[in-house]
Amino acid sequence: MSALWATSAVLLVAVLVLRRLRPTWYWMAFGVTFAAIRVLVRYRSVMDACGLTVPPSRWRLALARVANRPVPEARSPRILQLRPTSTGLVLRLKLRPGQDAFDFSASSDRLRHSFALHNVVSREIRSGVVELRMTGYDVLKRVRMPPPEPEPGAALRIPVALREDGEVHHRDYREVPHALNVGATKSGKSVYQRTLVVGLAPRHVALVGIDCKNGVELSPLAARFTALADNPGEAAELLDALVAYMGRVYELIRAEQRISVGLPDAEITADIWDLPPHLRPVPVVLLVDEVAELALAANKAEEARRDQIVTNLVRLSQLGRAAGIHLEVCGQRFGSELGKGITMLRAQLTGRTAHRVNDETSANMAFGDISPDAVLAAVQIDKDRPGTAVAGDSSGGWSRIRAPHTTLRKAVDVCNAHAHRTPQIPELAPFRPQLPTRVLVGEVHPPKRAAASAF
Figure 1 (cartoon, rainbow, N blue to C red):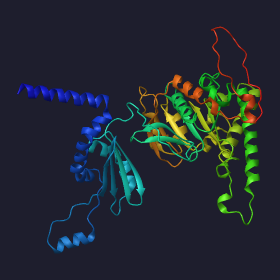
Figure 2: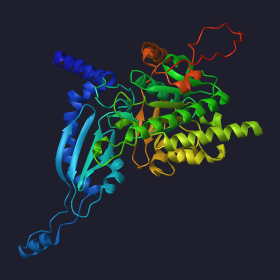
Figure 3: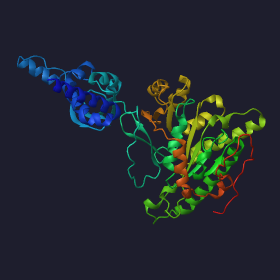
Figure 4: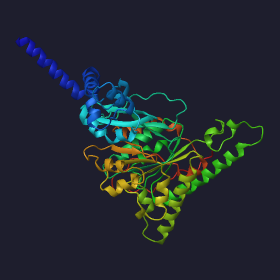
């Protein structure tokens, strides 16, 4: 008997260790079975307790009266599918007449407690069908990104984080051309940007950076950047050059349209993506590390420069998509106090990502015009979990995500390994960065700029 107790104790300890160190293995081995049984056994009572049932139809009530039978019970949504995943369960339901998908979204927290699962996210698949993605454990506690899958034709679809439902969150520049990333100091905003650069480095894309913190964030990654500015003065000149490049791309698109009666519809284009591959310009991703530094002004000269910078950013956000120019704007705050034109720029940034913020107003700057629920979720991010964020877009959909911790050393190594992929753009050649050199503390070296090179 003592041997049996000892064996049981060893197995219990092994299971607990597995649950702590390898939650995915524990879930697939034990948790998914118990969770599925729990969901199926409690399903009817949980639906009734959460108000997700409908009363019996009139013909059923009439039939019960005629047959002198008890009144039929309220009907729950019909289960179409219960599918296990590596992080939880996917429950697909067929709604009854009179039910709304919003009712399930509003009851997601109650469903989470009732089914004793970590998280429940509801989304509408099609008319009358709702999918509940239920997570069995805290996926965001230790972010483990799955191995990247080859995605032909999706050169600008970058996996950057893990969603709370276990799915990978992608930054798709073809679907969402421009994005805003806000967050307080030490919230993980810079790590998210670093992860994005690591994902873009192996792709055929030109990286352009504006880092007004004297280049401390982006200069180590300079080997993969086509152009880089580290102060507002250079940023103004760089944006002027980028707008000139955009004009040249539009001239190319206009010249290649060749619209005539006999031209097939598939060959008519209004952006770079339908151009022949040998004529298609390289897409450009502009990363702005701290937008407030570009918008602050202390005198008349700086005000004129600020207006020029904001005007060019607005122009790029409005017209840049067809020319393959995409904006990734980061900042701690992004409100109207930064001056004229800022709210116009924010309105053009479809993608929104909010890391931990210090006040509700900062969260409202990202999601106030999209989703009040996302504002509340952004305010509730724990300061002990850097990298956790709320990601959404102008459609109102949002989810919690957490980016993996990408060290600066890893980012530097990836950028150096793919430095040969850095394209050269004639308009941006004067801003081509030089590789950073080691300097002694106290030494001051004048900034160097690479000479213009032929295209």
